[in-house]
Image (cartoon, rainbow, N blue to C red; front, side, top):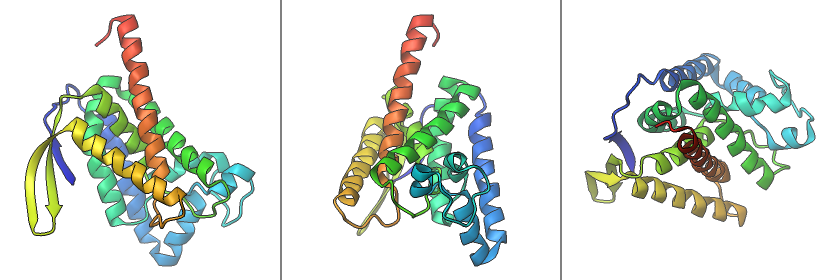
Amino acid sequence: MIPIKDNIPSGTYPFVTVTLIALNAAVFLYQLSLGMPGIENFIYKTAAIPVEITSLYDIGPSAIVPLPFTLLTSIFVHGGLFHIGGNMLFLWIFGDNVEDRFGHLAFFVFYLLAGVAASMAHIMLEPESTVPMVGASGAIAGVLGAYFLLFPKAQVNTLVILPLYISMVRLPALFFLGFWFFLQLLNSGASAAGGASGGVAWFAHVGGFVVGVAGALVYKALSAAFGSH
């Protein structure tokens, strides 16, 4: 299922969402300019590598920032065109509304915290892994979790592609995002049980989504306490 558009207009221009997409695109274009050996080296220098985070020992190539801060740099690095394309599509469709509700600065902080928390969820599961983690998926999973709670009545125009069947349908956001989360749970369970993960940190998606729901709950509680929308 590929989301195309939701039916919730944003009340403000999504400066942060657009800036995040531009930053990710700029970093990806820079990666492409490095050529294959350079791309791999850049990924290792910017990725969050679980064993480096848990041991605070750089296994090389040397990170471009102190090791804990790779939890942030890794959010802006992607492994390929489909990786960044899918992530930015989800961010564009769901990010503007969450930014509109949270406010620009709070949304930016929330996005980064969700990304860090998502990475830590994966690191807790595989603390000795030497496989580099890159991508905005965990942070965007946080955005999806917040959207799931804040916009339960939204509708999502969705391209459904099945064998011998392709169609555009309108799905409730609760179903679309609930089904997305269910798939992440299934894949993370299979990965934890020793199945092939396909190089995807599935549990980071689960952790990010849960953090997003929690962040939205905190926002709603504060809004109720202080009388904001």
